[in-house]
Image (cartoon, rainbow, N blue to C red; front, side, top):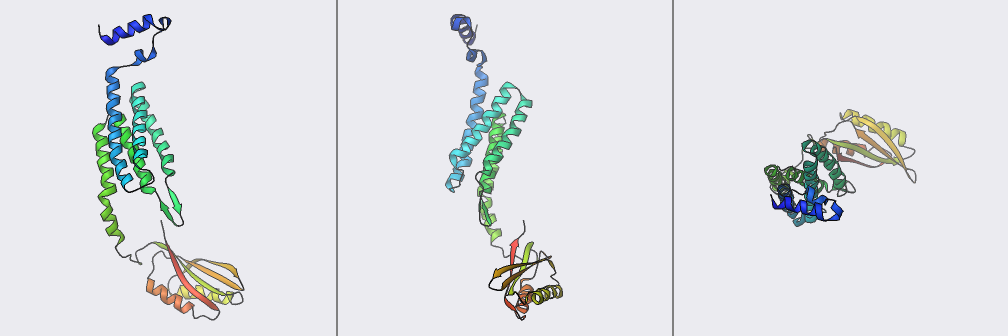
Length: 258
């Protein structure tokens, strides 16, 4: 008779008025060791991913990444132990949703810039590593970790090289606006001249808006249909528009389309 079975019988018969202790009934040594391996792997791999984030002083650093990996592994391991593969699949689906909300918390918008997208994606990947470890797919967990680290480190020089390449204005898809400032009295004439000049330059406007700025000043904004322009051509068009009687100021602006 095994030592574990003797302990169960002794506790069931001698403790708690004959009521068995639940822990002794449910404890399985090999299942526990399997959980130790799964959670241990999730911890170690989470440390590897989180150390890189901590080194770069990101919002979600070492501790957050490790907790995400270990927590995901714990939920999946629990589902595997209690219900099997089908229950684990449902748990994984809910873990993905939960990590999505957690990742949204590290994304910040500063003016026109958005920060934290890469950190949120890294947390999502750390959760995937933990889920693989919890499902006893240790090799897959290691593979995902290697790819995440490669994406955050080895691809950085490539990103910097791409960012240094001069943009081709003709190939860049963006929203272009021509902005004129005129007096209120000259508004009808300036508006018609703006549309006419843009049509002649083959940069027709999809929308023309006017905004009163006070002191008898009106701002006229024409949004171009084209998403790719020649910078020099547009400069020439704006220069001609600036010479129209009644125009106080003429310029153009662009914002990258997502």
